[in-house]
Image (cartoon, helix red, strand yellow):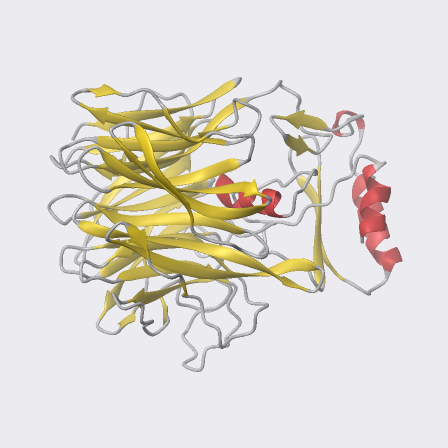
Length: 486
């Protein structure tokens, strides 16, 4: 395989492994873990996207200058190399004229396939995380590559104005993917990924009154830890979830989901939430976590599930699963919360929240079960009913790209679904109330951004909705926050 990669690089052909999740964060994790210097191109409609196939199966994709994928096939390792090369060469023959550029385009450290349009370097402020404090303050964490490597920054809003950025992690290392919660007046807890010691690991830091008080490395992984997700804060002790890679043969293949609780200013011993009793080739990713107000927490994640649970829930790969961890770190039963129905569901990027009655809800991104057709996209919502989850409800649907589902709880206990949707050339942010009896009407938020991407949101203590996003406009993506009326 490596010889083929080197051979085709001379022809300006790059091999990509794609993975679940159509936000930029899963793609970033994937690129960074495999230390890729060739492109990873997310397909927001999931017509060509699959879970990782590294050991045993190799997915190969070839993109033209218009961004259209002209080849996406799986090849078994040990199979016929001539068939492998013939398929690629046939696809290359379809790329004529302007679709064949002479050299790869490198933009802000990301190497794109030669066909991708060269529009100059971009500075990216990205992956915002927004949290509200007990006295109406807000905390915004985000990453920036302005200094050449990833930095994690925090700014706070109090008394009607924003503070200057606090460098939570700003070293020569690659630090990114922050998530934050409030831990008291004027205090924020931030979790992020850093390769400061070689491998990527999860770190946390407490920022109080604009100063970093305590930084701690949470994981000491053997093969990278990524995708931190914080939940709780305020009067509820925070919990943290993430996944860790492990090797199957020469390359990473398996990811497992872990969680830890922040109690009395320190972290508990991590516990593996994804099951140990199923085959390790089943991948677990995209964790989300929400404390339940009883000392425990609910964890949701995406699972490359192949019917290996003894109870045989009516779901198929990929699907969303949930599990409760109690205050003593005891694991509850694994519950299938994703799309229930025939065929592969293609569920990704869950977001979990707890309603005022203590019931966990989950929303997620789905690519093939939309009411608008097989190649349309949808966001689904489900809730625990008794001891299990039942049939899902469609929260949003689009024939174009749609992603970034966020479940938000307001101060009165109401729940809201927020998401990002392609409005036909530029992106939009939408929100709708959800409930046990019915869903409210969806509405598009009137934001000042030209192209708001990857939103994060929260309600402040007065019930006002705030939205953070990257305004993805060249030559500089800027993270902004807006309060929303109504």
